[in-house]
Length: 424
Picture 1 (spheres, rainbow, N blue to C red):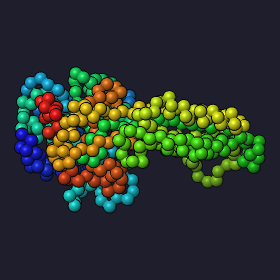
Picture 2: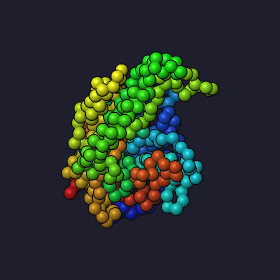
Picture 3: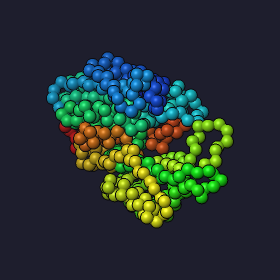
Picture 4: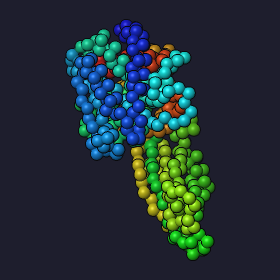
């Protein structure tokens, strides 16, 4: 059966490439959320022609949703010929901004040197295309397969996923008994099973001062200087502490196997939205946004407490130091057990297709598995798909055609194993 299925996917290589190109040619840039509905309907109408029941779900009221930029998701479902498990392939349709440095048209879907180039080729329209071709090949060979197959195209993953998988998961689209196994074709490299991701805690810290004339700063209190003291404590105390924390999670790349914190932005004093000379004032406010990534061995309370303790020590040590801390976003780490059925199925097929054992990794950043776990309470979920992780969000992003085909084979054979209960 496996050889026949793989031969059918080989025969669909040109179709797989063309579907990848067609998806790339819809410029679903997020933010603001361009052309989401066009992409959803392309997927929906294709799957409807293959006997799937199609549902379009708008993420009403979610961040960024508006009549101009509706957060439109598509879910396609086909019931098999007998009862059984449901295997769901989920891919996000949004892509990040183009940026500078491209040598090809980012939305042409250029094919050259055995690769498909374009924004989203790697992350993750190639993965969506591969999962669609995998499912189509499977049902062409076994139209009366047991259980059910689902394909979804969801939005906003690049900005948190709240209009996409989070919205759907809260409505039961990623929960038992509807769904049993979820594969998200993120570009974590074609020989890897991604079990989950590190945790994330975003926060804004604001230091306060008192405005005064810039020629007499001694009559005011400069909030930027207070923030400089915060940054100094980060450098001297917090960053060395984070670097000492290591994890048993197989995070890739190696540098992410420790706790990390990025200073995302800093703003203080006068705004930048003016022309001409600045006025002579002492800054009475300064804000930074921090992006803290943490390990499964750490707790939320520990992560937040490290920053709060640092700020409280400054409050005791530094004259007139005042601050506010506002949490912006928090997601715990997640890691699917290596013994889960979906992990074993995909790992076995990676070895069958590529001739080498699967590698197991954890993503340094979050992706939509967080919502499947948190809101869907479904933990038989992984990321697996074509594409090289380091190419995501880069100029001249591409996906290799050989990787597209190999990943489609892995996904099709894994789905068959899960549907039939023949997982080793």
